Image 1 (cartoon, rainbow, N blue to C red):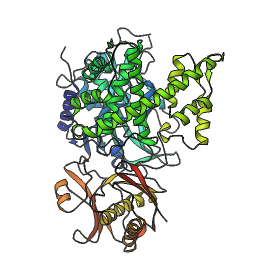
Image 2 (image 1 turned 120 degrees about the horizontal axis):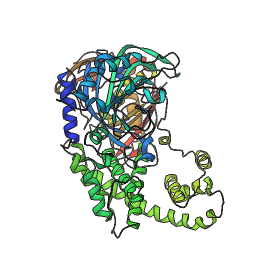
Image 3 (image 1 turned 45 degrees about the vertical axis):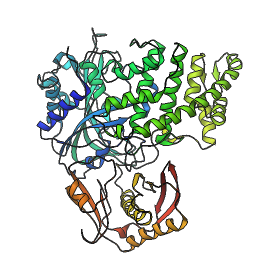
Image 4 (image 1 turned 90 degrees about the vertical axis):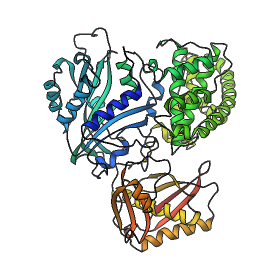
Length: 609
């Protein structure tokens, strides 16, 4: 059997959809721009939400790409056969062009044609939406699949939690989907064994989402003005099934990483779901790969106690913890995470050159966090061991949440690791009690829910759009006051405020903050028009448009200009939009706070009054 690599699958997918008149576009950052509802880019469609809602994409109505993604909700499931924190998603989109029939037929052709993936028909199964409330049962998709040769006993109607996708955050485009499954079993678990069955015979590899609705801030589903298609195929899972493997960790994607962990720990990976050392090796492999991609991103965050930085810290520290567990079962001298990280970089740098470009930052941050956590672990584990004899006397085998919080508050010991230590001793932790103590100290991380505020990329309400425009004015004003070094590092917009991160290695002075504020308000008072043009990225830069350093842009981009003309303008920036029509609509701009975000990065919080 020929081994299908991730690179080959990426190439096949892109080439197939380019042959179907799709334009290849660039994948975006793992840190979403202007979306406060999620910490990371969670799906391939995430950066495309404004276009799914009606914005015109400069590359056209048919698009294809591959995208880096992270889903924090899967962290606790990592270690089984298929769950990953970081993954790559292949996707193709129709922005008001084709819909269900053409999307399904293209999916079927790519999966089954000898020229492409050549999957036998008997290996495929399909699920469709069973309907709910005012959203009807998707008989249309089922009929299309049947016309292509998928038998009725291989099609399942499933509820919302299985076959209705989105939105990516609190609001945004969404709709029923049709998922494609690969049969991995030797025999059906029963006569009713179909895709979606709770047995392990079926593995989802592709999802066609039919964007028909927009979920608004009130939780209502509104029909979209134009119907769109968003599809996603997970690279890791597809490579797994097409190579006849039972686990994503048994593929060529992970084998070099696992080999490096084996060498460092002197533990042998067997590929079993039931061996603790195998589970630890999988967790280390996933978490270090995820950490490398977060740290190697152009908008990288550093480990911290809030938001995306907290997730990164949790990934690194959990990898350290499982490295220590491996060493207890071997005579290994120690696992240096940066050694594993270099293997990840070597294996992905061709596709993602930003990893090698940022290798010094990646390695330094991993080394610092590992050293910091080793000290924390020693203190926290020592305190836990002191508590253990008394804890084991409790017949309920439940550790007080207050004690767990004390370990966190006093020693910086994460609740997740307290839970793991308790589980290893046959106990559980009163998590509700811990959360209550945590909230009292106003330290409950926003990353626990993954959704921080209303709004986001899907929020094109009046205030969010105004804040988007105000961000452009602020960016230009900062460059005028601080110089071009004050480049944007990230932004986060809600209907209530804007948050803007920029490069600066010191705090702004009160005078600099006042001057920045005055410049923005001066442009608002002028009531300047804001207009958009589509042009090549080269022409945009030549015209003086700001483009984010390290960002990957398509050949054709949207450029928003604040000013009377291309010769008489205040700000010009490459941006997907949307924006207010004139600056006069923004109101009074007020900087509420200027503070450190991370090393060498400052953060401004501002409001429009």
